[in-house]
Image (cartoon, rainbow, N blue to C red; front, side, top):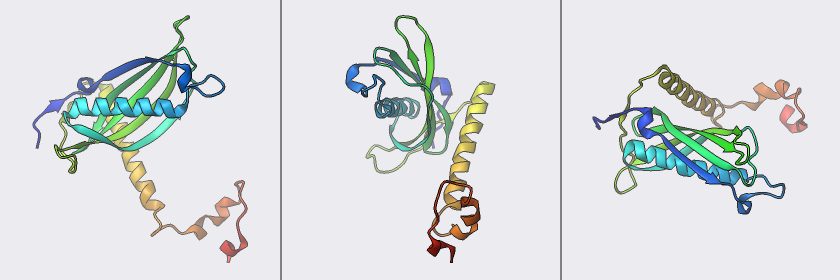
Length: 186
């Protein structure tokens, strides 16, 4: 077990890139997939910096696209480790666009990537340093990430094929824009 202890600030990574037409759609907005690619890169850099190990993306939790990003703007991505397990880390990422002419900044996107540290051969998971929480904001982010992971686990269990009973939800479906095949009702 690693005796290393690191703070979230020890994991902080920031990158800024000029948004070019090659990464845009027909309306001059940057493709969400391109932004996700940048987010995955900074999540890797952040988790690897924190753990000192090669890291892989285990899951991406909640990608909220709040505002579009225009060609010609700077895009800044800020990442830091918010939560650690034994071998995994939750990396919080904030994406901000900046209009070069006006300096106006806009929060465009937030997301949480769960990254796993790998040992030298890349096959087994390996332990990560303990996370030293030094501020109330560190504690809030840690607990929020822990809660998000627990909620995801509960949702997976509740909707697993082994335990889910669709008949319990048929009445609920009546309020939605769906048509239920009569065979399901019998």
